[in-house]
Length: 144
Image 1 (cartoon, rainbow, N blue to C red):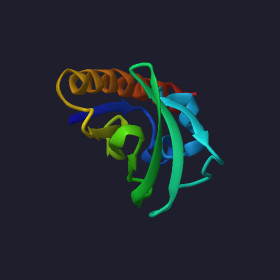
Image 2 (tube, rainbow, N blue to C red; image 1 turned 120 degrees about the vertical axis):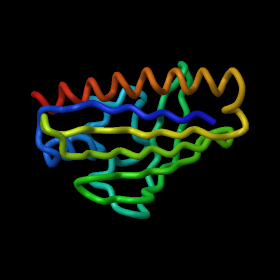
Image 3 (cartoon, rainbow, N blue to C red; image 1 turned 180 degrees about the vertical axis):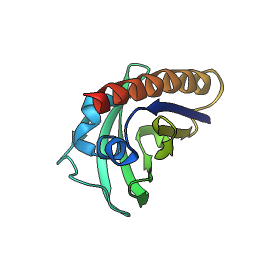
């Protein structure tokens, strides 16, 4: 199992950060592991909704079928999904007010029979790198 927590402070109001952070149509502009949506791009999230996304980590593409577990705009989005080979993923995207504007956080958890030992550590390291870069991209997107 791998768990990752990354955050970034953004000089923007929480509502503005949320508008970019939780909009599926912007994922290609900031989320580095996002490869493409399978089927239609969701226009918005809602609790219980399902969508298929191709993500790439460690150079390998995997289709994740996501289910929205929690949607509490403009604060938190939690999605949970299963991909090939029984890989399970949970992402929580959250936005909180901060002195400088907002803090955006991604908590991620990867589990499954393949996410153990050396491969589990590699997934955790790659996810931390990608999600940190993603939040840097989000910062640029919100600033533009």
